[in-house]
Image 1: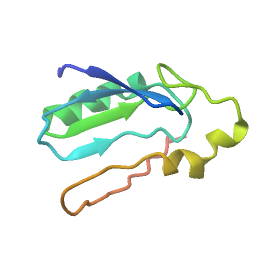
Image 2: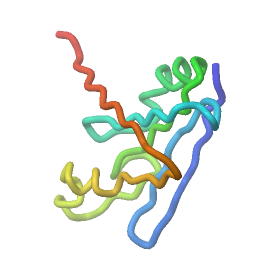
Image 3: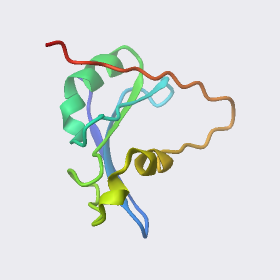
Image 4: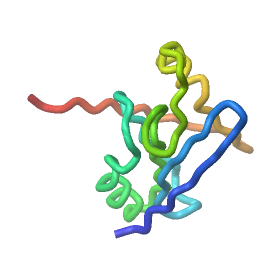
Length: 104
């Protein structure tokens, strides 16, 4: 089992907490839940994929856990939340989107 490290970033607009596991030089995998939720729901996936060499990050979504809870409903729109997900890199970035559906 990998150690999960909790981080927190605060700006004047918003606070976000997230869990991270895996090697710092591993390929980055970010777990964004389709329904707002807590980062800890990804615990098993974080452990397994970090053990396989991935650098895994799972944020507490807006309004949950240690992340701040905006008062307006509009702040929870998908476009608004995705506009806040950004990264800076020194080279090309490859993004693979995975969609998982629960079986009935």
